[in-house]
Length: 248
Image (cartoon, rainbow, N blue to C red; front, side, top):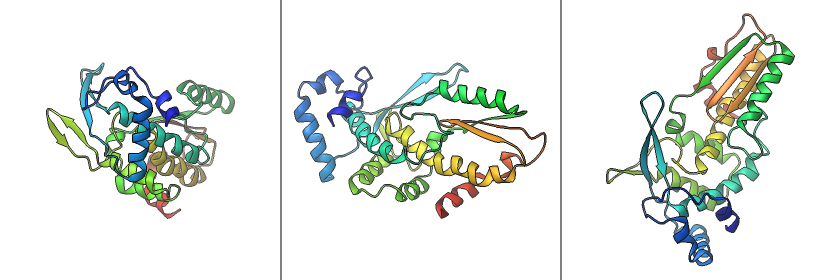
């Protein structure tokens, strides 16, 4: 837990409890011991995030969720466990929010593939509102395949149900990943590993007559192929991919 605390950013805005990193650090050892005890015993209650908005370049607003500092530490600890499990499974096409991987590496891979294999078609995909629309039931089914520890699963379920406070009202969530914390991109990678990455390898590639490569950074993907014509990625329904992943 001390390592999770060390890796947690200390300069972020406080959550709904108003406690800053500096205030939490005053009794750091006692706070972390108490946190571990509440997590293991099941007494930990995942607090809702504080919802905030920031302007985007196109004039719209991006919705943010701000967890409490202690919740950030707890999420970091669970994320560290999940990374030990899933880094063995994740495919090489995935670059977003993974240890030792970056957007620059994704771009370099894409550049090398385009130059070396003389690919003619590039399909740029971004899943609209992906983090807000992840199916909890499908996510739990995917986690069932690799994560059986009751403490970890209980914590994940609490974060999925925590909701957000906006204008003084608590709004529960029935889909999407926990907003604002480090657990969110980790769970999102688990979901897309099954629904997109494995689907691409098992369903899309066998249908093509030429070379095809997928490069994914979080919910943004680029597929490139050497074919002038053939079966397009869009010809395979994503719901079929979910059902395929559950069956595997």
